[in-house]
Amino acid sequence: MKLEAKVAVVTGGARGNGLATAKLLAVEGADLVIADICEDMPTIPYSMSTLKTMEEAVETIKSTGRNAIGVKCDVRKTSDVEGMVKQALDRFGKVDILVNNAGNSSMMAVADMSEQEWDEVLDTHLKGTFLCCKYVVPHMINQHSGKVINISSVGGTRGFGLGAHYCAAKHGIIGFSKSLAMEVADHNVNVNVVCPGTVWTPMMQGIAAFFGLEDEEAKEQFLAGHLFKDREITPEDIGRAVLWLATEDTRCITGQCVVVDAGWTCRAP
Ligand SMILES: NC(=O)c1ccc[n+]([C@@H]2O[C@H](COP(=O)([O-])OP(=O)(O)OC[C@H]3O[C@@H](n4cnc5c(N)ncnc54)[C@H](O)[C@@H]3O)[C@@H](O)[C@H]2O)c1
Image (cartoon, rainbow, N blue to C red; front, side, top):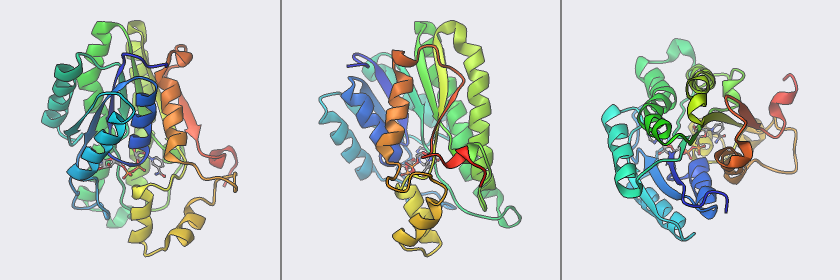
């Protein structure tokens, strides 16, 4: 096992890419803290996870034989993040791996976008990533070891129609991660990014439903850029990239992006 005796925090870990990632980390020996908002957000046009979803996620992770706790935490809020990190330290004594995965999206032209719509996306992705790093990284520095993996997107490397807020946040995560990687390299902390292509999680299903699209029709549109037509990117594909970055196999990789997009960004659109 590659993560024996390690402790990982996965934000937005109650479902989707986050849950798949948490399970893969647990199978490799890590104990898990799942941090999730478990509450809907006014401008996001689909439901977030619930406390029940999170309880089920914790049970699924425990079924691998590892310990896990779920913490209701809105990563946009300092007090929530501070409390979540305290619970992680009280329960497990340390944090070795931080996966900033919590995310959401709405689809909106800039001219029609309210300040609240902008804030709910920017604050979840970008401020949330900042706050979780702010409260976890000092512990990693003290223990002279740690792995931070931030989840960006193909939307962190190019624009998406009606996604200016999402792409601004995802581009921001890449810049933030490169800068943090420079700050903490002397403390044996690696900071890297995973950029997924389209993965058919509740987020994408929610966006499709918002446009009134049936699943198959929506997939045809949202997966059109992928070069592989015989396979879909699964949450486990994203989780395996995160897992790799969490192990010592990548000890000399920092400040980098791993793009898991079935070839989407390797050609001009
Ligand atoms: N699915 C895709 O196609 C895709 C593509 C690129 C990047 N991503 C990124 O992957 C990550 C996971 O997305 P997913 O597709 O699994 O979506 P998802 O909606 O299935 O899961 C996201 C989780 O984050 C939680 N969450 C949302 N806002 C939060 C907040 N403020 N605080 C704490 N938790 C919060 C939700 O409750 C949910 O459990 C996101 O960062 C997303 O932007 C997804």
